[in-house]
Image 1: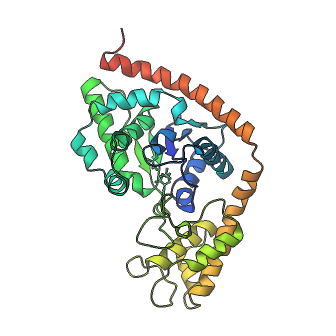
Image 2: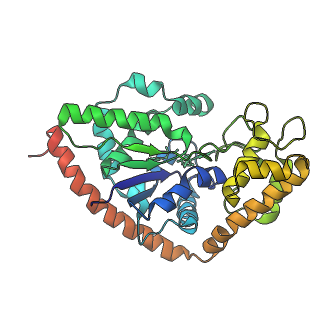
Image 3: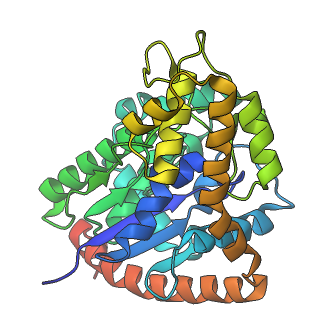
Length: 326
Ligand code: AMP
Ligand code: TRP
C-alpha cells in the first residue's frame, strides 16, 4: 500500500521550547516510521513579524539543528528551508484567489499578532501560505499543537473549494494533535500558552536549556493557591501544567504523580519536575552538540533540491487545473 504523506512546519525565530517539543515535534519524529514525512523550517512565515535580520540565517540553522537533535532525520524525511522552494509561494498566490478576506480577518492568531505589532499583508495572508505548504505535497495529515487548529480548518476549506472549482486535486488533510501536551502553558501565566515571543524568558523552558536554568525556571514557576498537587485545569492551571509536563517526560500516569506528590507541597514537586525535564531533554542536548554546522547546511541544501523537484511535479498539475499551462 502507498504510504500516506505528512507535512509540518516550525518557525525559526526564537528558540524551540518544550511546548513545541511536546505539542508537535515528538509526533514529527514518531510519524517518520509510518509516513512519508516532509518537514520545513518556515522562514517566510517568520518574517511576517519583527525579526533579527543580522542573525536570521544563523537562527534558521539553529532551528534545523534542534530539530535534527530531536530526531528529525534528513535521511528518512524531506527536510529543508521553505524559502528555498518557490513553489510554496506560487501556490499560496493561487489559493489566495479563492480565499475570502472575511475568513482571514477572523483568524485568531492574526488578530492577536496584529493587535500587538500592527498588521501587514504577509501577516494577513500567513494562513494561506500555510495551506499552500500543506497542499503543495498533497499531505494527508499535519502534526501540530492545538493553536494551529483554526489554520488547519482553513486549509481543509481551501482544499475543498479548489477541488470543486478546478477539479479534484487535493486530499483534505487531517490535523494530528496529541491528547496531552497540545497546549503547554506559560510558566509565568498558566492561562496563556508557552510562546517563543513572550518577552519573559522565564515563561518557557527551551529544549537546549542547561540543567541549572531549568531548575531556576521551574522554581520560579507560578503555582496556585493551596498546596495540593492535583490535576484541575479550572482551579489549578499552574500545577496542572507541571503535572502534565512531568507525565509526558517520564511516561508516568497522572494519577500516579498525584498519588506520589499530592500532599508533599509544591516545592518538592517542582524539584522533581525539573529533574524529569532535565533527564528528558539530556539526549537532545547531547545530540545537538555533536552536529556540525557545515554538514547541517549541506543536508538542508540537499533537502531543498529534492523538495523543489517534487514540488514542481505537483505544481505542473495545479497550473493545468487553473488554466495557466499551455
Ligand atoms: P511555532 O513555534 O509557532 O512555529 O510552532 C511550531 C509547532 O509547535 C506548531 O505545531 C505549534 O502548534 C506547536 N506549539 C507552539 N507552542 C505550543 C505550546 N505552547 N504547546 C503545544 N504546542 C505548541
Ligand atoms: N503556522 C505554524 C506555527 O506557527 C507553522 C507552519 C507553517 C505550519 N506552515 C505550516 C505548521 C504547515 C504545519 C503545517 O506553528
